[in-house]
Length: 266
Image 1 (spheres, one colour):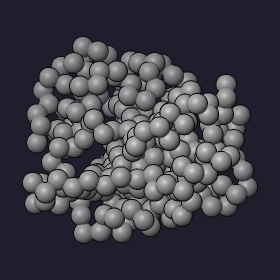
Image 2 (spheres, one colour):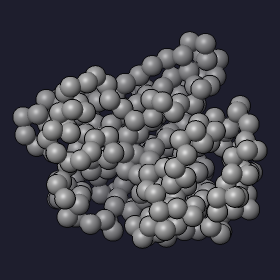
Image 3 (tube, helix red, strand yellow):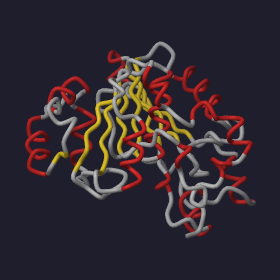
């Protein structure tokens, strides 16, 4: 399997871009809500130069989650990690590590309520940003919480000395989450070994609401795209209550469908 593109002339061009996008919904100004949508490693595929060029040089502003937003939000921020290594190089050559990304997002969200959203590697950085910036909640789909247990043949940069020196305190999130009061709504596939390992790394953390789906789909484990909008727009309190009895066992399709039918947009 080819590794992601993280060097070369074309990479340098795109890494010089902002790699974030901001939009406002003036009609929702009274909500005072900002949402950060964090792209995963699926931002381009496969890991070839052709796919990289198609994603970032042949089109404008390719970001994940543009079709699945929280409708009541006033400010929307999309970010992407073109390196596809859990944002250890940040988002561009100026905001080039996780601490700088946190500082940047702190300024962008100052005075606003906050929600963060992401899947896979995007779920990882959504959890970091949400917990540190005291978000109302984090929506994490197949998120990561322990980078130390990852395979360096797939993600080689996170194991380098440079990445560790810049980001080491964010490699294991259990301690950060344990002292945080931010609710993390974590949906993950029970049938994938890697996701089970990540789930174990934060097992028992009280504010992580862990929903184990009968699925082998990494990313959005329930597969049905229309239910993403239901989850994002029903509010964390309604979701926590709806899934209140579902945090210990596997959630099968009939239970999932019943819950989805009960959700109401706020």
